[in-house]
Length: 288
Image (cartoon, rainbow, N blue to C red; front, side):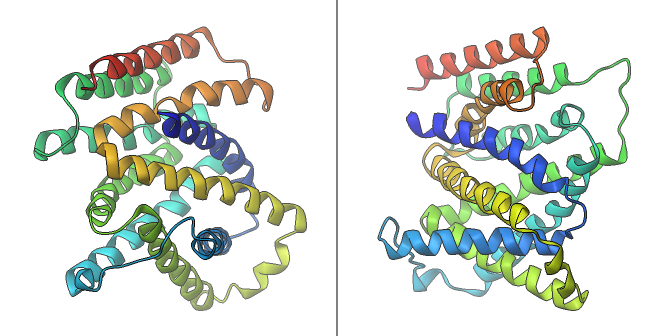
């Protein structure tokens, strides 16, 4: 159980640092993606070298279908990067949060209904759905509600990422989370290199200061660990349970907002967090 607590904490730190990363609008999406995924590949390679993980792709699984699926999934993921970066660089996190949370809801509903082998019971499913919907509903100010272009970007991103989850789960039945993540990062790194060359953005490297580079390295180190833990959870607990437990990051986000960003959470935020905690407790009691 400690794995999802650590993952939620790292995910919250990732969101706080990620906000600072995307606020630098001088660095284009392709360069940000290139640096980020280069960091991911390097960190994972170091882990492989020191034998924390073993990189292995079964030869029998290298076929046209799997290659095309991996290309499509990684391209789809690449499309979400500029959408989220532009949105979070120009809009408050609290405004975008309801639309970002849909990434947790869509796979839960679809996967539970259509996949009979889902490792979750009805109580877990209802807990995940109710917790997700409460977070989304209470995050929307109905009096001032409107879908801005930035909210729409996050909504589209959430839909794309929800579909991409299914491809990731398929590959996790074939290879380890570390092997899949390393391969995915290599593909995305290749896309960023091609687009940098195609758009002739080589000179943007001069805009990357030492301070910004350090921020990227720290953020990406946290991202690698968080995603590895998340993929491990997906491969063992699958979608419904993982989505429910991932909501724990709300607790850590409000703590970090208070101490780092000096943003005091509202009573509504505190109540929602308590409700999410209750849903997780229900899962713990009825997970068998």
